[in-house]
Image (tube, rainbow, N blue to C red; front, side, top):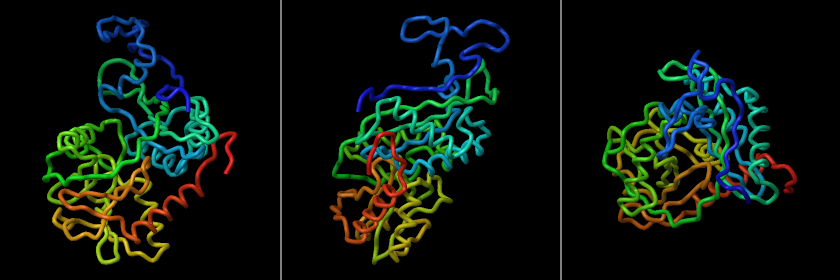
Length: 309
């Protein structure tokens, strides 16, 4: 992979311009004044207010995973916050085409592994909360994180603020940042967030646990983001004849689990090796669900140009 962390963006009129002034907004950044903010001016609303959406996709050996599902989530999220999709990103087909093109522009190709982050940002037209209605797409490519023996701790209830719009992946992700900082302080890879006394999710991953041959996962009525791989797991477990129960559980329920795992777009199904002071092993049930989920994600993946199956 080349050019990791490079940024590509769409174009839009009035980048960084004050309304009706005909002059560029002035920007002070790390000791220097800039008369034209350029790309930064375009996405200033996302910086100021979190006024935008994002999706994170995995590139696996030259295949873009779950692209159609992420495209549908972006469109649903845009509708949920009243954000117009960027020009040329108006339906699922266009979104997938542009994600593939951006991945190629950023250096991903046959055999590549990577993480592709797509952000739609409302366009800044000057100060104030009023939105112009335009948006711009930015796509960023980075390396796949290293594998890990996943250790996690369950937090006390409500020590992390609740997401403002939990079921939409907005650019306002401060609860995730706070959760990640807590994990670092506790010396673990992940923390399990708890809201109102009920298990919710990890830093940015959904929680499943196994007990007596069934899978349990916090329900989407809780303040969590129900991710695309979470849905994949539920579908594949059903196809395997494994019951999945969505609902509300107190933290103590994890003390009786036979195994647990987290799900996310980048790491897929990730078994928990240590939960608080308990050592956990992956179980045959978790292994079978993990394999089935990985297989269907690859079978339905979008090939990057020049790749081969």
